[in-house]
Figure: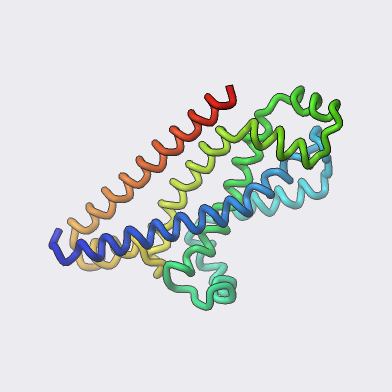
Amino acid sequence: MSPEMLPLLLKSFWETCYMVLASTILATVIGIPLGVILTVTRRDHILPNAAVNGILGAIVNATRSTPFIILMVAIIPLTRIIVGSSIGTTAAIVPLTISAAPFIARIIESSLLEIDHGVIEAAQAMGASSMQIVTKVLLPESLHSIVLGITLAVISLIGYSAMAGALGGGGLGDLAIRYGYQRFQMDVMIATVIVLIIMVQLVQSFGNYCSRKLNKNKL
């Protein structure tokens, strides 16, 4: 790869990091409450509510089943309202967040459902409120599993951010399309793929490490 491409590769790398980090934070902030609500409103849980659970579950499933490219195009008006543009790195954060939040919600729900119901019953017997059960029993007990799940979400977002480049989202995907594909510079294409692979490996390794530490601390 030519030396003049290195600054572009570095710039695209930081754009991808910015998109993934911002969308992960926003999706987690949205996804955790959604996941908790999906869990506690189940028929056999602490706050059963079939209507809330059914409606919220349908919305989450509908969003999750929409391919990212289609979702990104479909919410262009919303993206323009929120950030003032539908093109650029910041604009790509909107569809990335909307795509990842339902995924994280299901991850949270799955992690919380792994907790032995006897632990919840013991907390109820001691007079714990529903909020206390969520904040002091459910979330702390499932934290190591949640970390692994969010790690998977981050890896998915790295892939989605590359797809966002095809629609003017910037980042490594945009670099690969503009130079690697449209200008037939295979060295640029290979370099972006290698960087994406390294990013995924680092994220997965860090997530595994954090999950192991949290699990050991719990034991």
